[in-house]
Image 1 (cartoon, rainbow, N blue to C red):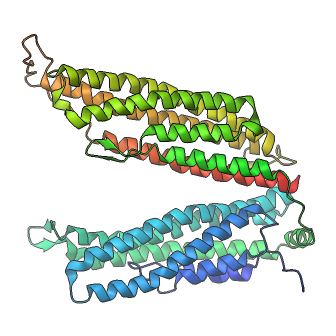
Image 2: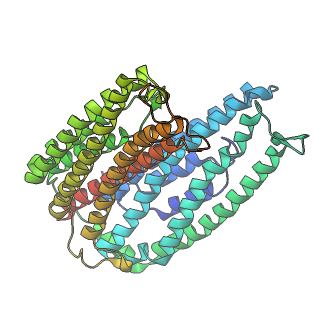
Image 3: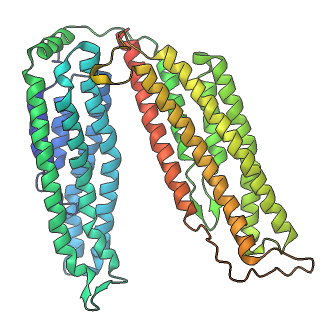
Length: 471
């Protein structure tokens, strides 16, 4: 039985690009993307040992294959459901929106890991044809074209949501009248971006496949036998710890309905604590400091959550100053929210120190100080990412505290401060903002924190795997 060939099959990648460059309409794709992702999956077949990044890229391409494959029967199902009944267009819109969001969540890590693998071949093994200006150009156009595809597909469909409350132009023309024109415009934009992606990607594949030195490096790598697994326990602990860390960042998202937060920050503190304790055999003392910071965060977040939910379950903002119990509950909630902010900042800083220790001891390769194309050395790049992680975590906690404090501050001023007889002074002529969109700012910041933590965890796991594979 012959050994499976290890290498990059550029013919498969080129064929996949031709399936990907065309735009989507709703959930219809003239050249089905499922074939493209299957070609990408097999085009990188056998490359897992060459570069660990490709193993993750193949997983994402396989998920995208199943997702885009299910879009074909979904299109026929939606077509049969909406035939002759335009009122069901909202269902089609929701389908297009769901497919678009799911595709976007898979596209970002798939594209990043694919090109990261190409960069590793250049930086770690000297296959410089796999990186350089053409690779950067192809990567930029890949992001633009593939990310724009699902967005441009569902944006025109959102016009259907205006049917319940139509907008009129000059008092006569329904906004939905412009839907065909928006679809044509979206297709033209998607086609232009797709052609740019196709041209840039083909030039890059031609350069990488035709370089003699790169071909020789691939042949040399193919002749290597897989080394025994080393550092398996370290890799497993770091993988589980970063998973807890990512889930902890996710729990910081405030899912608030009827003033109740269904994802308490205490869950995030507990997950941070589990991540720190899991890494104690790997890092030692920094893990204890991170565990202490997460425990302090948990001890502050529990009473802060209890006081806040107790207030909102019994009172409203307008009750401030008129009920001593409401005032007491709200002041306590603000006090513990401030303590929670400081504790969360301390926990994020301690977790950053813990990640620094992992970066310094469990990542790195020979030649880290010599990075191709003027990029930062590996350790400095990962240290900077970790500092950004700590800053984003502290910012999310601060915004949550600010949202709570501004609510009390503006309501008290708008309704006047209470007097001895219990009647509030009316601040005549005072117009104050109620910061009604502050919750959205907090949610966006927490979403960025979660996505960045997910990205940092992915990069860290890849670097640790590479160290124990190539050392």
